[in-house]
Length: 241
Ligand SMILES: CC(C)(COP(=O)(O)OP(=O)(O)OC[C@H]1O[C@@H](n2cnc3c(N)ncnc32)[C@H](O)[C@@H]1OP(=O)(O)O)[C@@H](O)C(=O)NCCC(=O)NCCS
Image (cartoon, rainbow, N blue to C red; front, side):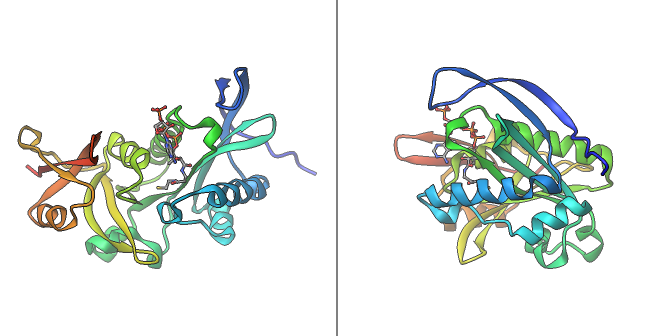
């Protein structure tokens, strides 16, 4: 039998919350042999998630399609246990294509890639792993394919994820209901013609002020950053130049 060569991207040591020791980790490209570890990590994290609507589960079939060439996934292992995973779909089926939310043309839909799964074990949170893994996937995508747009959706209540996507240059372009009637920001980045914003004239809005955000978005504003203050999450909007 032919041995599968795993593509290791990074090795190092990392602290975990449940003990004071450092642990050796391997960050590598996942393949079909990691399928059950990914599904188990997802199941375990969904079980302990207080707000289930922050995360849309990936199905086993979707994960298999990704491993068969529709995209790429990365994972971080400690002692043969998967602690974090992130995936990017570069061949997006029409029915799941998030750019349809923005009425992209048929031709443009083919140039869309999407960040899909993003999971970090609570023991390992706080190392910006989602940002690091998604960033590596986005860089590899640009080298590998002719994708022009990188899309994803994020809950207005998922602060670490909003922070991850805006730091990657994906801006909020729509606020709508998706999946099971859940609130979602549709965010994307255009690699070819990046959006430029008039950040000197920023408007700050609470993440729960839906009408105000929708009005701004209708008037060519984009959400590009965020912060937290005494009464919750604030989103920073600026108009496209
Ligand atoms: C979203 C997620 C991947 C982010 O993990 P991460 O990369 O470790 O997050 P970060 O390192 O950017 O975290 C930034 C801060 O938020 C905290 N944080 C991260 N995830 C958190 C969560 N789910 N609940 C509360 N706090 C969280 C971190 O501890 C850190 O705090 P600190 O600055 O005080 O250390 C992780 O929370 C997760 O797996 N959530 C469940 C699945 C999910 O929602 N996926 C994203 C769907 S778009």
